[in-house]
Image: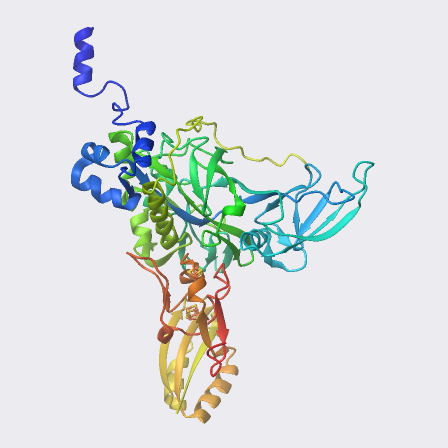
Length: 402
Length: 141
Ligand code: SF4
Ligand code: SF4
């Protein structure tokens, strides 16, 4: 028995995770002393290649990631403050875009994809958020049925980031861990949240920062969990919960990387401290509005395994190209290295590819976060709770009414 | 001498019609095909640059009109608000000439005016609405 144990430990098969090289507390101590070694996820690829993961884990303390993508499931809670006489707002519009007011008297949630009632797709909740962050005045109109304690029945005023009480972004689903690439098999151009897709497999679009993407650098959610401090929109925020549609059970490669949409994060952050360098409103033709959100997450290199994980590169990350017209079950597996080359081959035809997620911005975020950690302005956190590692398959919504 | 850029839409019944040959032979035009998307028995698209005498070009366009082939003349130029650009790449997915492009390693958007067909496809593909058509002679607009 004892012999077997010794043999097992010598062959390295005892315990799936190596002995930790360092703890988060030790890393934070180094950060506070200005001694931490911080690199971006792209820089880490070369470091591990040159030194091997064991040595890299000793050399590097923190790896920073970044992404800047359209994320529809985004929005913000705002508390406007009370008027005199007060109103219990039942319906709220911000610059003509409806905000959800079915909560307390002067709280509302403005969602990124809600469209303007006067301008349609030219302006939406995402634009309200961008204008708010830019410090612009926003027209608030609210209605109520009036109560004994809240007698006012309507109000017209302006709000901005300097006069509201709280304004925090709360995004139910950000940072999708991988995503399917899109194409179109039909004879007509289609307009989707994956951009304009040209007829007859005329183009392919894809949307992730790949080797720089937060959850692709911690594919099994060892260090990113509930409570993790993140860079969001230029401010510091937190992982609030698993994101909606979090689907850790997605098919995975032997390296642990999911093929297609898997884990997601619900994020929260102070919108008053954000910058439009990292939050931008977007319009997808004939689809609607959405919000580009810049997110960066620092990953502590606790051991050799995390060094391996953060050295992932686009050639190791795969996804499927799917037909967004829904007319065929076309699916073709490709690596991000192929997608990033500018062309893929579909049915023996060379098809141009285009990203929708900005590499330029993702790199800017990873670099900025690297500097913030180096300067001691951004400390790492141990998750308060892990993200679910296993979950039941996603619910399919059956039509049960008529 | 005049030069124009034209897009031509061929109905399925006309995709085999030898229009280019006729433009050269009967109208004395020089034809430069910039982009072609032609499939048998399907609607086809051509973007061409025609050069020749103004009168010949006008006559050629009249002739094209009589052939159930739709044409659209491109004039003006495309402007890009570069300082606002987030380099997402959405516009590159629809650009037929690759005038808008981005590639490894830096993935910055580049716009090559010389190659632009002024087809306008990119205008609505930009989620930030940073691409606009401006008329020639009004290039700063
Ligand atoms: S107008 Fe836009 S899409 Fe058309 S060729 Fe010029 S850059 Fe490309
Ligand atoms: S689509 Fe617009 S924002 Fe995106 S790269 Fe093109 S010009 Fe820039």
